[in-house]
Length: 171
Image (cartoon, rainbow, N blue to C red; front, top):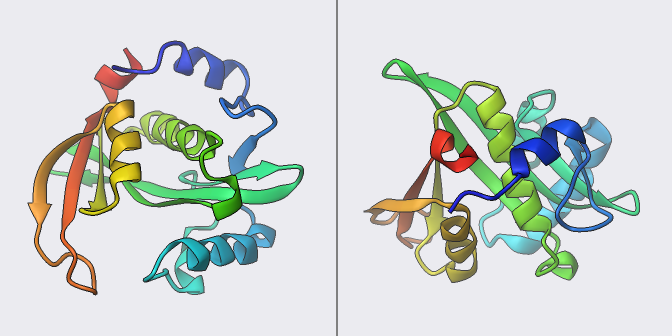
């Protein structure tokens, strides 16, 4: 089910958040080291630092801050595919000490809204087959599994491709 009232909250207050004192904004160069540290703490196969540098200045690279410190981030983009704009959530992570506090959900909603504003009609993502926590969050927000990709990750683990229709999500 799409989140109720999200669209209005985000547009009326750009810094709006579901996680209390959290601020979500576009990433800046000064955020990159904190983002990279979270990436290394959360993922067994982290992106290289240069990957984050390439997304600087794009609307889909967001950071979540609490008390001025980066506690999470999301990286997404929108590209044209077969005549329609497709959003792709490429990476999202929350610092281990901030997990379970709504940071990931807030980031996910904000990045989905950002992709919708930038023309995406559908958003896709890939998630590890064994990452039940992430899959639960994505399904709760409205994503559906569309296929399994065998051996997607370097360690051989399969991925699920999940998609979300943004028009239905925004209600």
